Amino acid sequence: QVQLVESGGGSVQAGGSLRVSCAASGRTFSNYAMGWFRQAPGKEREFVAAISGSGGTTYYADSVKGRFTISRDNAKNTVYLQMNSLKPEDTAVYYCAARYTLGGRSVYTAYHDYTSWGQGTQVTVSS
Image (cartoon, rainbow, N blue to C red):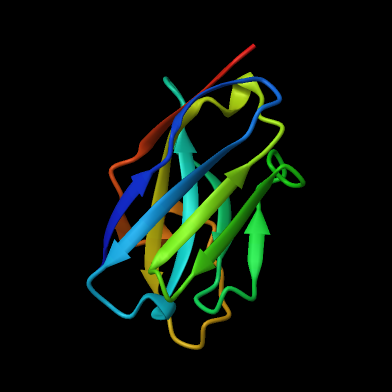
């Protein structure tokens, strides 16, 4: 399994932008599909975005489509989530997750698809 560490969270006003990062260690990063999830207080963890091991395939939750962009740099073992036009309802702890996969093309959207998780980073959007 890989070890994941998120960074880059913080506080921003509505309409602003943030980029969160997730650094991975332990295995060949390109063999892992990656995902971002979030969990707001009192709510279940929900899928945000996913990217294939090669980076060629991405998928987004409807709630963030057009505002968030997931990307990865396999040379740096890092996946990013660029968040633009942030809304107060985007406030949550953001978690990155990894799943070992061969072929490099698949993306995964379910919580139980992933086997490694980071500790999370808080994103707060004020109105």
